[in-house]
Image 1: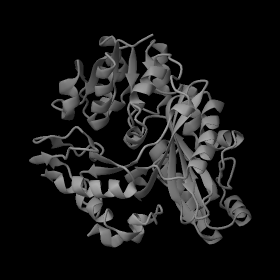
Image 2 (image 1 turned 45 degrees about the vertical axis):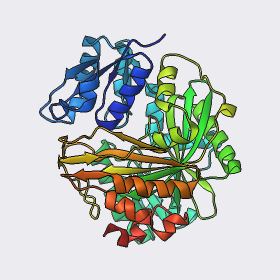
Image 3 (image 1 turned 180 degrees about the vertical axis):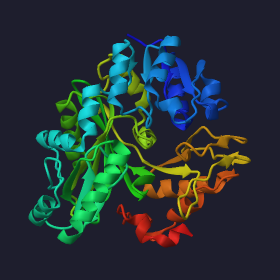
Length: 446
């Protein structure tokens, strides 16, 4: 049954992105907002807005009961979480279900499974996805961890079972480092996620980060190919592009991720993330059970509106596409224009005095920014996503240079100078990129 009104439980560019798709589909867009966002474009453009002011600005979007109250008072059929905030909160999904409101995303049980890195790893391994050697259960003893490391070979990495965003991860080169590294990872995991469980796996040196876009309807899944996301700072992506792989490798890994999604009854958009070693071998990393910031790259090269497809599946529709319907055209690059110091990556909140974004053939900008916009310091620093499409990678790089040169933002510091230097850097142009790219090219930081 088609939705009549959907609550967007988010803010910024992703809220505006979802709102536009709802309008295209003839669905009313409702939105919650904190005090800091009361004049934002998503709030101004929504059909109905609900002021959800809290003393802590984050709670405007994280307080489950107040979000549900807003959804009920505005008579919403469904809630779209976007990314971040409550997008991967199984308790939120269960509460919505109790209230008879549809969550646009996977079930609570699937979110719980995939949110536990140990369980997710085991489930995907059973489905046939390649995984790095490591522990199949939590490890709390340094001696046990050291023995495992001797078996699989150094270096290894300690990760939080409930983790994400690289929080708490510790690379260990030798047994004498284990005790301190284990305690540090457990402490950070407990602080960040309320769960101190950690596990150990082989550290993939010289790795590239490649992810696959998947859509499932609970029974069947299809993929929309890969995105290359190795240019990162503090495990957060800065530049994403695609396609990256050969047709043969895309078919191989694509079939595996669809099998993995189907094995857990996945419903909605998902991103399967992998590390690829110097030999070209893939190792499963995690599944992000939501729309990704960089879904836009895939939209440009496939021509499909992923957000719309995710909403249609949530409405109970079966997949309207088969794998043979998906094809890839040209090359797309996305630069995240964060309001940050381009050398130290420190957030730079403030008022935008000038704000001009490029347009023209092959250019897309997803942003909630405008002249006079007050960039708050309490939320994520993403200001805009600048994307270009080209006939091939070289064409896309040239267009990105032009687009970056045309972008004008004053009032806050931003990453445009860094992105502009990346577009001219030799290793980037030669596709010689790993997840250590920024660390190995400190000259780019100016």
